[in-house]
Length: 339
Image (cartoon, rainbow, N blue to C red; front, side, top):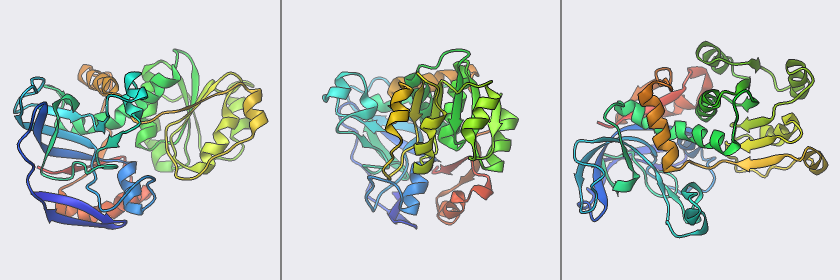
């Protein structure tokens, strides 16, 4: 079957790999129809993705069609269109027993720790498929990205009327923005890319936009009448930004790291302690987060129409992929059309 393999940083190859075996108990055979391209894939191509081995079949943001099911896979049936929960948890470790399957001790993420969806067909646990009779295949491929923000906002327990600062308006930042606004927050955006700023101004109800990383704390004091935000989300994955972010949090507030960096991060201990700040990391999402995203898109509360800006089939993707790393090309979300 046709399969796209990232052999090493900077080099994809289109290969033919063996077809999977028929689905076993609790499994489903799916055809991969759409694959969302996310920062994880871009960083893997650059060679900057932590905890990553080559060669690897990328792809964890998936819109799929069910082809066949094995015994005890009654939740889906052939012909169903589904989003995929790409987090293969063990179900037995401490976080799994706590319901935190997103940070399972033995977690394997499709397209990161194990081979993912840039191929024709794939066998998956049927329990990892979330069916929708309403969403398009493109929308189903967006569900996982949006669930990252849904999970982060839920972890921070954002309340209606609360003022939050979002640092970074890439796809993950946009997912945070979407669900912070749904929670009723007033959102201040810190972003330096003119294209991203313009995109957000056109499509989101922002409280304020800060367009420079100079003197951010004083700008926040001015905007908020001498106060600071009670929650700050850093979605940059940039160590320098993450180390500065604690300066923008009010006393008693929360700092949430949504982006990930391979570098060490540190900040002033007394300043952190003085504010009695809560520091949170937010990793992946739970199946319930993905289902919540599906429900919101189906109900119209989340509009996905602005998201997909670039599409390509397998052969064209091999040529186009390097250009998707360039912010000047205006990529919000690129999608691979497998079939």
